Image 1 (cartoon, rainbow, N blue to C red):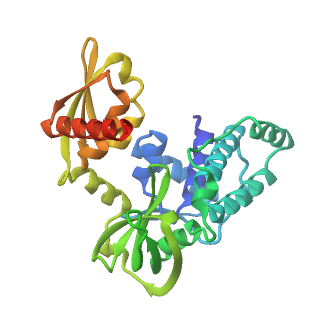
Image 2 (cartoon, one colour):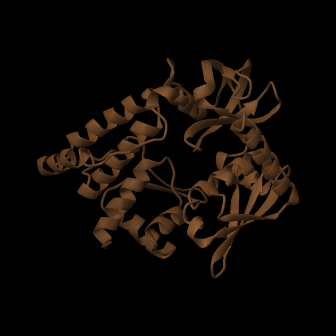
Length: 318
């Protein structure tokens, strides 16, 4: 990236946040702090009102705005990909806002770039494993939850358990939204359970925003919460399996849903290590690959597999 392009990108970065540190700019553009200081000084000398605050970073004077930003074809294409993903991995409350944003982006693009983007739209598709309607429900909540996280507002939810369909009313202090295992999950402090809980968003039957605000400092960031889950192995049991090299490629993706930790490749097999909270659940998954998998440990998993097989034989021999 030449210096003119970098200066323009730094200005855009400064306008995108309330305050930006020199180290953040250096990390993004892979330049030294000394170069950052020179570039910011160049922006200031060109008439951009950059405010430097010792110990906290740079900001742009309130009220200063550039004309609409021109997007490069590559940037517009990247946003199109994001829109396709949002269409399949969010609910209607988010989709309509993303669609409106894309229209605004197209409004400032050159005619030739608009034509290219329209053409590309018909050549990109995202498929999900579940139909969107199965997750939506009559009252989508993602947009409301995002607003409550930003405003630090407590919420009152009616939540349906995935185990027994029991509905409970909870007051929750939301700290973040986490997408994993094909679903959006709300992470928050549950006052009913007096602990942090993971709520699958499509199981929230009703949601009410409360006037009450909570202190963000009382909670970890979402990133810190997720990292604590990774470190906490209590209640998990180590499983070691030996997988034939030919079979290993078939479980390469699905293994991450079953607690995969690491692997060791040998000449004709792969040794895989997992952490699981349920040997029964893990065993049922393992039976999909009979003939190509051996259990090295624990013995309890071998016993569980024999029990599952015996039950299946009994059921299908009737």
